[in-house]
Length: 204
Image (cartoon, rainbow, N blue to C red):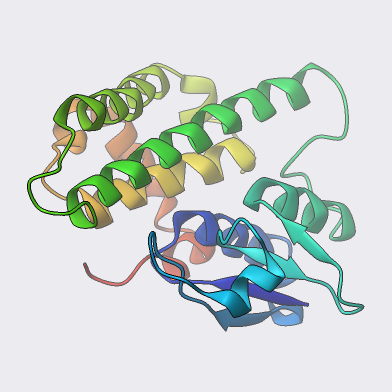
């Protein structure tokens, strides 16, 4: 299998963490790819018209899109417990993950707004709205001991790791650690896991 990725992508990091946890990382070839707003990449568009990272290309050529769907596929073939197969906990974890994925989407849009938008064209209200979504999401998880102190390592915890790691990577001065000490303690504890440490983004 081949996984398109960038070391800076929190979505690709999610898949890499899952693959390591499931013992599948040695069966996946990591293929560096570059996608950026306003920049054509016809070769990658042929793989994924959405031009998003990551995608998983199976041995027979089929493509699996979206980081969550890739994790679900790996969890299935790896016999893992990152995503329960049925029951109330499955839907709770999927809902938590959807919130975390939306937070990452908003943070990525904030990054683009500041770094890619032509100078003088920043839409501050739009930026603030998206940042507030991510910030409010952090506040929600600050008060979720079931996620922060859960005995199992699951898709919600992986998603939260990727949110907090991306905040450190791209928004180092945002103050999330001071505002959310329980999240800080959770992330420091998660950094002890090899999968989390290995997949950390490079210095900004």
